[in-house]
Amino acid sequence: MIRIVLAAAAIFLAMVGAGQACETVSHRDRSFTVCMADLASQRVSVRLSDDQGAVLGSFVALERDVQAPIAFAMNGGMYHPDRAPVGLYVEDGATVSPLVTKAGPGNFGMLPNGVFCVAPSRARVIESRAFATDPPVCTHATQSGPMLVIAGALHPRFIADSPYLNIRNGVGATPDGQTVFFVISDEPVSFHEMATLFRDNLGVRDALYLDGRVSRLYAPALGRNDGGRRMGPILLVTETVDG
Figure 1 (tube, rainbow, N blue to C red):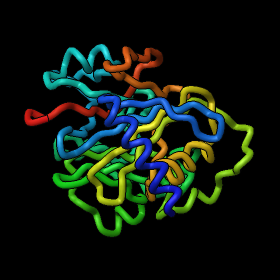
Figure 2: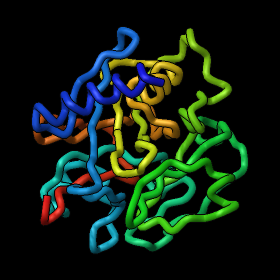
Figure 3: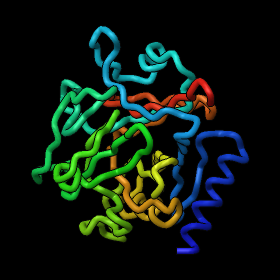
């Protein structure tokens, strides 16, 4: 536990000291970009469409549509061919699509999956069936799967030496819910490698996989604006007025 706390603290200090939201880190000889949101000075939300109801689908469209300064943005969960969210999606307090708790095909259906929920006072990742049993109030939420870390344990189906590698991204919050880590791999990685980064380096007890292959990051401070396939939900971190 002490080692985990020290590793997380080192990443915190490196990012704060550099004055940037995102930092490249190495874990198990793999390269990742870790972006950190502080709820005391930043707002975390999800975005799907513009004011006219057209799906944004890209960081270029997002940048045109958002007035607040953008710290960074990342694809925010799986979606159907029409780019509608798969599973629970809540934006500005309005539920766009319902929670899904049944097992199913693909990564989303590899239970346990989970929900990233942003409430007025904290952010957290909650396993989907626990969410259904006692639904919290979420101002913004997106469901995806599988869970990477559940109460400090790795997803039971992850294999340490798995040959299935991909560009992947995920999200997790610190236990107090005040800091959110958004992670994207800079090279193909396994679920196990990404999950252990959240647990062992960032001290996150609950983390959620967002997607692979379509995973991308918009980080103005890094001069990074990943292109590719059009997205569905987008996770957005903006600076608050007081930030």
